[in-house]
Length: 192
Image (cartoon, rainbow, N blue to C red; front, side, top):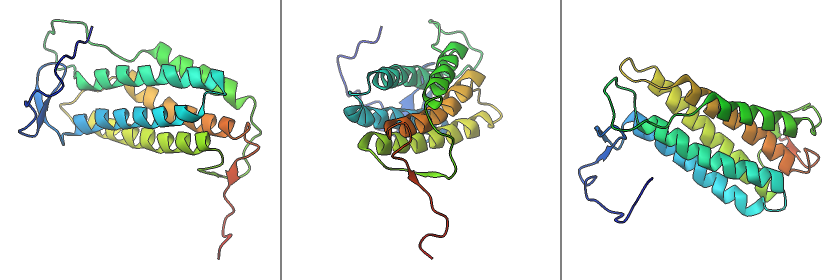
């Protein structure tokens, strides 16, 4: 259980932050940037949810995803450096990714196939979901970059989850546009 009774600790005043394994890293460290961008994705989904209450199933899925994103942040904030911890670190599971895939398939089944790229927009909910999607893609790029660093470890499930998340957010954005009927489509060369 997490108990926060004091918000400021002053330990980060030197530009560092603590990871879940007790290690201190610079606040601009790639790992910190990766889980910070996951947090940014989560905040954007919170903004989207201001517009999702009428779509109960989608709102419930977004609520679950917000919780999953804290799991993903905890996973990334606790690198597996081979040293024993006093607790079992929280890791993203294949089941969480599987649930996203199931929800993608359910939403996508109601959509007409795309014949053009979709521009971010349409409804308020769709626009916010597209914003969350682009932030999730940035988080994915940072997580992949982190995984390519020789002495860093990122779980494969974390990479898979964030990849599926951006797919989910794309399909959810189309779903929020009256199941794609109100999508704003790209018209190549329209303004030449």
